[in-house]
Image (tube, rainbow, N blue to C red; front, side):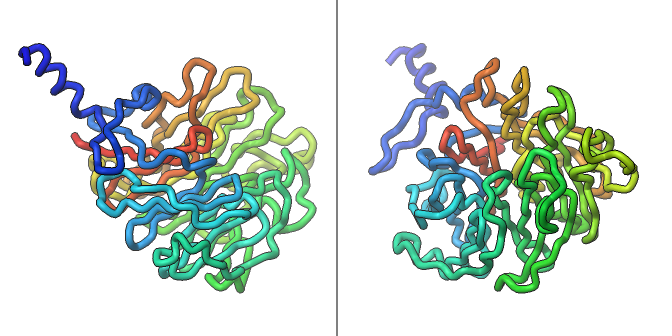
Amino acid sequence: MTTRHLLSVLLLAPLLTAATPDRPATAPDANLSKIKLPAGFTISYFAQGVKSARELAVGPDGTVYVGTKDDKVYALPDRNKDGRADEVVTVATGLNAPNGVAVRNGALYVAEINRILRYDNIAARLRQKPKPAVVYDKLPNKDWHGYRYIAFGPDGKLYVPVGAPCNSCLPEEPIYATINRMNPDGSGLEVFAQGVRNTVGFDWSPQDKALWFTDNGRDMLGDNLPADELNRAATAGLHFGFPYFFAGDVPDPQFSKGRSADTYQKPARKLGPHVAALGMKFYTGKQFPAQYRNQILIPEHGSWNRSNKIGYRIMLVKLDATGKQATSYEPFAEGWLQGQKPWGRPVCLLVLPDGSLLVSDDQNDAVYRISYKG
C-alpha cells in the first residue's frame, strides 16, 4: 500500500459506520454531510426508517420511544450503547396520531389527538403489542393543531396542550388554546396557561423550574408577521394573547379591537416568522461545552406558506445568568433546507443520559444523534 493510499484510508475511516455481525459498514450519508454544526460537533443517524418520527422520550434502561403523526409508536433500544439504535420496534399500531410520548415509573404514556394512554412495564413488553390503560379520553378530537406534546413537570403532573382548532378564532370551548395539567392517573385536569395558539414543545428551566414553551403564530398576515414565540410561564394562570395579539404586539385584524396588548404576557423571545418552532429542550447534559448548559435548543420544523422558506434548522437561545432572560437567538444546526428545497424537518429534541442530543425528523423518517468530541 502506498503512502498516499494509506492516507486516504485513514481519512475515510472516521466517516464510515462501524460494521457489526448484523449491520455492514456504510458510506457517509450525503444528506448528513450538508448539516452545519459548531466546531467539535458531529451528527449521525441514531435510527432510520422511523416513519413520521415526532416526540421523543427515554426510559430508565436507555430505550428511546418515538411518537408519530402516523398511527404507530416505536421503541429504539441501544443495548450496546454505541450511539445507534439496534433496531426499530413497533410498540403500538392503529392509534390516532400518537404524537406525544413520556415515561414515568417504567410506564410509557402516549398522547393521541383525543386521549392519553399508558403502557405499564413497557421495557419488558416491547414486542408484545401490550394493551394500554386509558388515562384520559376527553380531549377534543379535532385534527387542526391536534398533535399532543406531553411531559411530566417538576410537580409530578402530566402536561398536555390543546391547540386552537383554527388559524385564528375565538375558542368555542375553554379548553382550546391552552396548556393543561393533570395527575398521572388522569384526574384533576386544570388549565395551566391560556392564549396559547399551538405549542408542540415545552420544557422546564433547570434553574428555577419555570415552564418555557414554543408557540406558533397565525398565518395569512404576510411573510414576516407574526414571529413565532418562545414563552416563559413562571406561574399558572397567565394568558399569552391568542387570538387577540401575536408575538406580544401584532394585533389580530378581527379580534384585537378594543383590547390592549399590555393585558397579555409578552414572549421571552421572538423567533423567526412562520418557522414552526416545535419540541424545544434545555440542554442539561455534560457532554457539550459549558456554554451550552442550561441553554435552550429549538428545532424549527420550517415554514410551509412563506414565499421564501425559512426554518428547517435547530436554533440556540442563550439565557442570562439568572436563566430568566433570553439574550440571543442563533443557528446551532442547519442544512435540512437546501436552497428552497428541504430534505428533512426537525421536530423534537431529547438529551440522552450520556449528554448527546437526539433529533427527530418526520420528513426524513429518522432520528439523528448530535454529539461533541472536541
